Amino acid sequence: MNNRVTHLKAAHYFSVASQTLSYTKAAKQLHVSQAAVSQQIRLLEEYLGVPLFYRSGRDMRLTSQGQELAEHLTQAFNFISKGLESVKLEPVEGTLLVSGLQSYVSLWLMPRLWRFSDLQKDITVKLFSADERIDIHGGKIDVGIDDNQHLTVDREDTVKRTLISSDIIPVCSPSLADRIGLFQPTDLLKCWMIQVDDSSYQWKAWFEELEICPIRNKNILWAEVNSWYMGISAVKAGHGVFLCPKFMVQQELDEGILVQPHPKALNEKIEFYAYYAKSSPRRARIEAFVDWLRAESGGQGESILKANTHQPLPWP
Image 1: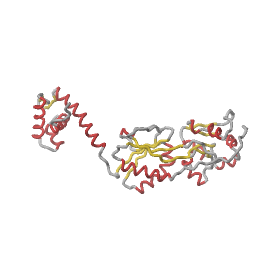
Image 2: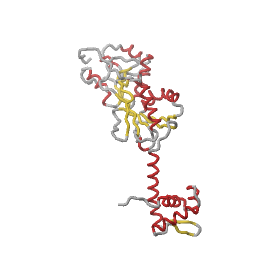
Image 3: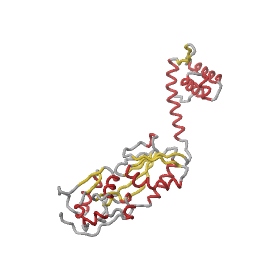
Image 4: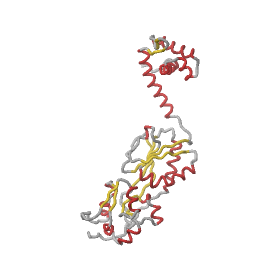
């Protein structure tokens, strides 16, 4: 099969003329003379052996053959255009579209984003928080941020880079800890037990890792939330004790706004990743942003908090 494309220039001129239905308008778009457009289309008609346009009064119309050819060429030139754009590398300067989980964006990224803007004044970050995953290959975002429980990227055309690996720890307000008196793990059961609706990070697992029998007491007060953000907001207001990623509350722990009532962290950590299209024309600014994210995390959450040696505790 001969894959050689002939009369490519004439096909291009015809494709533009088929959209404008005017040699004059086509010539203006192509930055050539009207005679040049007319000549190329005449050469194409001679090669094909069929007319591509006809006159209807003062208007120009496509013949049936012209209409069919125009449809094929429109798809072909759109494909060529996308191919050229896909390999055209944009400069570092420009806009970057970033989408991440609401809790990560609201609690960790947004308060620090000004630092990136200070370092990269020519990059404008448009930040979106959404728990729905957006296809980075669809052109709507450049960088996605997700955790290891939800991110299932395993494609050769996608880059995935680890941002943070963090312990999941119990936290509560200092006033609640003082009021209840927290001396052993089961003391936590005196207040509301708040957890996210993810089976990997729930109180049942935390107690079982401490070799405490599964929770069966119906009098225990429970609250389940669908985001880290909601649970952290609740405990900052003094409502219960919550299992959450340490890095999201590190500042509150440092400032004494929240406390960790028991040193035990869940055995399973949570990890957050940045992912982006390997062939993205914006990869220079993407990599500048992702490198900053990794540096900003500073290895938070890398150390595992070890629980003190203990004997299995009885159920109260």
